Image 1 (tube, rainbow, N blue to C red):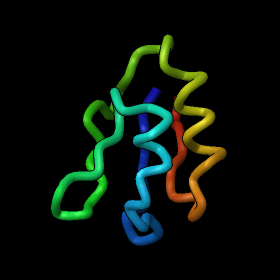
Image 2 (cartoon, rainbow, N blue to C red; image 1 turned 45 degrees about the vertical axis):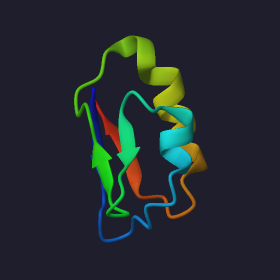
Image 3 (spheres, helix red, strand yellow; image 1 turned 180 degrees about the vertical axis):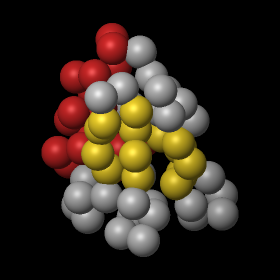
Length: 63
């Protein structure tokens, strides 16, 4: 699984970070960083929740 973020859509509002801080981080520069582009399957439920919760639909998962 690969986490893909469309940074043209992303507003760095940290909703995803609140759900999956192991994978997403918004830093002091107010930009979103993907900490792990290829997380383990155990994180899939959290990542699916982050995808669904993203207000800008900027996150997707690729298998």
